[in-house]
Each structure stands twice: as structure tokens, then as C-alpha cells.
Image (cartoon, rainbow, N blue to C red):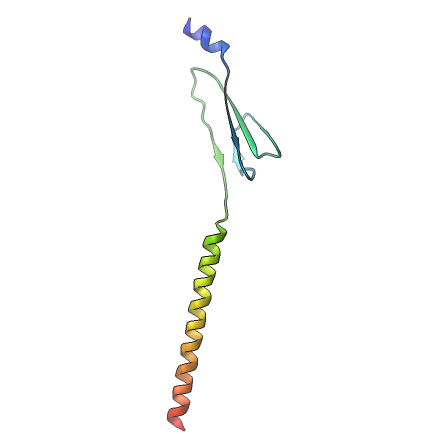
Length: 90
């Protein structure tokens, strides 16, 4: 009786994303690939898989800023050493 009841039921899962994934095993997609829909079969394993690639712009900008500050500090230090060497020889 349980199997008969389960065979009459439908299970689904929908995932809405800001961007489409690289790949997925969704049963079907909509909204230009940004909505993933899975239809599950009762009594079976139903894996939900999706691969994403997100660029963390904040981390990139922080790393670029730290690099720029380090480069500026190295240039400033080199100029100070150069000025000190010139003043010692004069």
C-alpha cells in the first residue's frame, strides 16, 4: 500500500539563482537557465547536483589594493634610500 501511495505522489525541488550554473543534473531549467527544477522519484535516491563559478570581486579588489599599497611603499623606500645615498656622497 505504501508503494502504491508513493507511486501516485510527485516530489520536486526548484532552485532560483542570480546566474545560470556551469552544469547541473536538473530535470529541466527555465528563466534562461537560472531556475533549476528537479523531479524526484519516491523511494529512490535522487541526487541534486549543480556546479557554480562565482567571482569574488571584493576579494580581488582587496588584494589589488594591498598590492598597490605594497608597491607604493617599496617605491617610496627605494626613493628614500636613493636620496640618502645621494646626500651622503655630496
